[in-house]
Image (cartoon, rainbow, N blue to C red):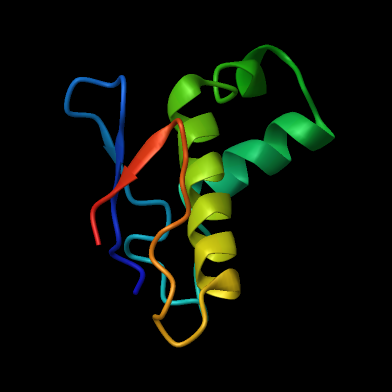
Length: 88
């Protein structure tokens, strides 16, 4: 589900939903575009996109993908993490 959200443990009500609004067929998440811009051409303009919000969205996406990959038919609960509290 692309709308799954993660609460940041030390983020005083800060949530990330890295795949929100992305259907997998068209469009690319904003954090992914920012990552590629900074990776392939770091300059004064793209440096602003290397921020904590985009980093948390990227880490959240990794967490969700790994959690989906290594849970078997819903028999295993969410993986432990020091950064996020799953809201699903």
